[in-house]
Image: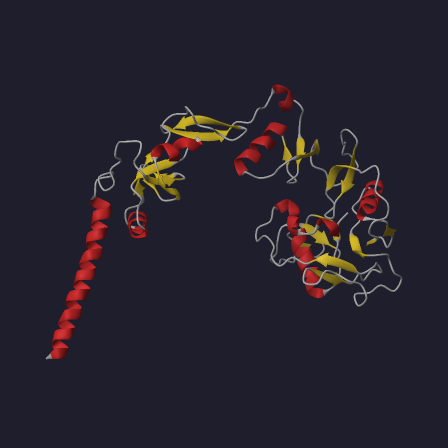
Length: 353
């Protein structure tokens, strides 16, 4: 008898939970927009500040809580929105998960008072203010011709490069004027800059340091030459027109090997140069971009194609043998080698130049 009563009680509980969930779902889809969370009048009402509106009259990304509309809307952003009443975590979960977001109103309905970032301007789009890229670009800049960007792409003029930098929100600069080249032979650097090939054999226009301080910390270059400091090694690279990688710290030794040179523990690995050069301390990346740009593809000295410099170094660290760039682009004589790794900017700049 007691078992029958317990079973009936459990069934009633299950039905009540199911009915409550069904009720909440139907309420979120059928409630008139704005009726569940009306925007009251009055400047002293505390509420929720939102970074943007996910869809008309709905917000899902909270910026601040317990703020008035004036406090929320004082930042001059084109996307900020506000809703009254501070909501509990349960209320937020309900309206965001089941109601499609919390009812909110935009702070700005026109471009008046909107502050956009440098190189951007405010326009009305679908009756809402938005900041769009609008870099200052004169006719003179457009007529200066092609430029090579730091991303390895050629742009019709510098205005195209500036606009891409704004749209992609990435650091992008002009390497030199003209089409991107594979060598320094035809690159013309302005001012007192000199063309220098980096570790992936891409040309850059750099300003060479005229003077270096006295010997501060001896370094052994990959050319097996001892330099008074990293600055002196960079000077030599400028004269040669090609990066001089750092082999290891200290003076070069005739009997140097991976057993007797000191690399930074846990960060660097020692690579053997099978062509007779000094052993090399290299920063070994743990991860690399899964989809690097096509311009990063290179052919290494082992005649394998790698999707980026990072992937090549990772493979070198895996086997403990030095790999260098043979030429840009895929190898013609063998199939490609693909691995998974991280971007160039994670490498210690002291490893190169």
